[in-house]
Image (cartoon, rainbow, N blue to C red; front, top):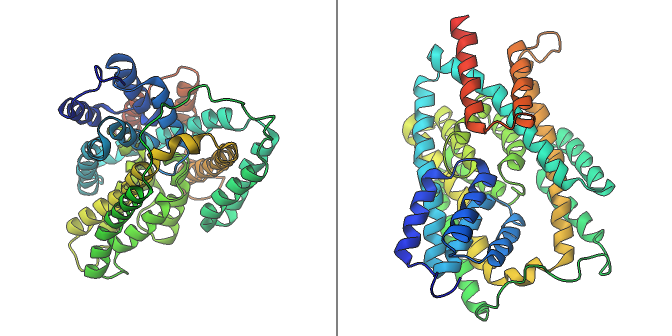
Length: 422
C-alpha cells in the first residue's frame, strides 16, 4: 500500500459497509472477496501483507474472516479502522439472524415452514462432511496428524468436556514434534514490510481496554439477572468457547452442540441443524449460528423475563462474547505478526491443532448424522429421506461442485415436497 493507493477513511468505511451485506460463502468466499477487492482491484493492501495477515488469523481461535477484516482495517487506518471493519463485517448478519430466529420460533411449527427446515437437515449434514473431507486433505499429510485426528475423535466421543484439553494436547504434541531447523523452510517467501516500532505499553493498554469491553456486558447481565440466569450462563459458556474455537465454526460446533443440547438443554439436535442452515443463508461469519443457539436457549428458559426479551438478550450477549475476543487478538497481536509467523514450533503446534480439529469435526458430523437419520436412536428405523438426500447433496458438493446457497434451496424444496405434497 503506497500513499497513492491508500484509501481515505470514508472510502474504506463504504467498502466495509458493503462487504457486510455481500459476504456469503463462508470464510473461504469471504476471504476471496477481500483479496479480490482490496489486493487485486483497489490495491489498498499489498499481497505480502494480506498473506501474512491471513496466516496470523488462521493461527487464532475464532472466525478467521472477521479477524482478517479487523487486521486489514487496522493496517489501513489504525485502531479506528480495525474496529469499524470488524463491526461492519458482522452487524448485518447479527440483525438478519435475530429476525430469522424470531420467525423460526413464531412460525417454525407451521407445516410448510417445518417441512422446509426438515429439508435443510440433510443439506447441512452434506456441507459438514464436505468440509471435513476438504480440511482432511489439506491437514492430514503425515502419520502423526492422522493419529492426532483419530485420537481427538475418540476422546471427544467419550469425554465431551475434553475439547479444550484436546486442543491444548494436540498443540503441545505438535510443538514437541516440530521439524528440525534443517527440515524447516530456510526463508519466508513473503516477508512483511517493516512497520512502526512496537510500543509495549500501548499494546498493554489496548489489551486491557479490549478485555474490559469483552467482560463488561457479561458482568452487567450476571449482576442484574443473576449468574444462574440463561443469558449469563450463555455469556460464560460462549466466552470459554471463543478461546478454543480453532478451525472456525465447523470446529466449535461439536463442543457447543453437545453442551447446548445435552447438558444445558437449550435446543434440540434438529434445531441446532436448522440454526446452521439459517447461518449459511445469511452474510457474515458462519459462526453466527451461535447467536441462534443463544436466542433459542433463552427463549426456552427465559426465567423472570418474557421469552422475547430473554431471547434477544441471550442472542446479543452470545454474539458479543463470541466476537469481542477477535478485536483483542488482532489489535493487540497484529504489531507482532512478523515475529509470530516465523516461529517454526508455533506453526507445527497449530498444524497439529488443525489435525485434532479434523477429528473433532468427524465425530461431530457422525453424531449429528446419527441424530437426524436415526431419530428413534435404533438402526432398524432410519429416516430414508435424510439418508438419501444427505448422500445426494454430498455428491452434488463433491462431484458437481454446486454452490451452497442453491443446494440449501433445493433441499428445502425437497423437504416441502416430501412432507407436504406427498
